Image 1 (spheres, rainbow, N blue to C red):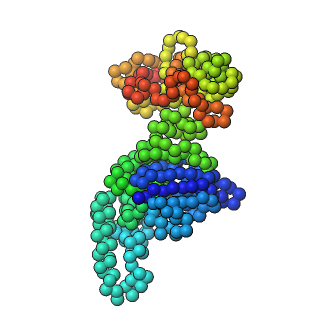
Image 2 (image 1 turned 180 degrees about the horizontal axis):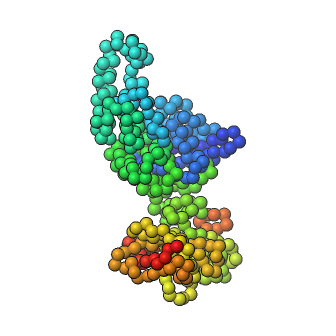
Image 3 (image 1 turned 90 degrees about the horizontal axis):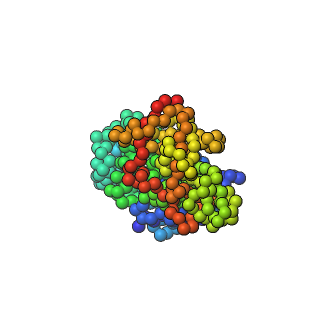
Length: 406
């Protein structure tokens, strides 16, 4: 069993408070990703689990036992670093074998001259060679065992670093932004390989990244951190569809969530720029709100009607299968609204929008996320809970064709 439990983890570097009472339970065999902006404390938390840093407060337990008193090599975890940390003068074989050599051979058996006098060393090295060959086959790097790291591509070096971790059969794999040095195409490929490797091994993976795409595509659960705090832990869908607070809503999702000013009207109804929405919350009339709307939940229309927001197109990004449109609200020019529209070949000419032309934006009430002045999510009373728009879930989104995109 390889559960990892963090209880009240606190850490400071001088006057800077890096971690603030982090509580987190990671299940056996789970792929959990720590995600957040740079400097939020996620790498420090990973190093504390590995034993490379000592926390000021709290406790770390692995497989049901507290490991705070254990040194890194005694914790049965393996860490894959951002820089891979391979020995440049050693072959791939010896890089992967190094943890086993250090664990299975005594100091005299590792020394250049004395090791020749050890009859046991040959048997141990044969066993180590068999273990390295097994791992190399799993990672498909058998043909690279005689090469040195300088002769490898970035993706190959990444596999060697993974092999060095795998050969120890650890209780948990700790990965600190291992894909950040790869180009975009290779990063996508390695995301898939890591996810498949996790399924084959069934081991506990704890992964650190600032890239939300990596977090959302590979993980069983995601833990969002900011300023040393653990904001929310949940599945990728839970974080996207029901963010616990404004900071999670702003970090998760690309393009970023739209934030529009709102208030509570008479009777508890929510108002968006003077337009009443069929949503009620338990708050005093006049209470200021922030209304979050995902870009794919914004619909474009040329029709007139109540509840629609007049807007002008300011910029467009063509991504092939979809377009990202940036609008400026007519009534509040300082407020921008982002719309994500999927295009279908048969309906691409259904709408034509010229740069700076005026359209109207429709926002379905059931897709709105409401946040109070403290940034916490507000519960809707007696109305549909926010979530993904039905059109997005089914793949049917109104098509759009742009004229001059500016």
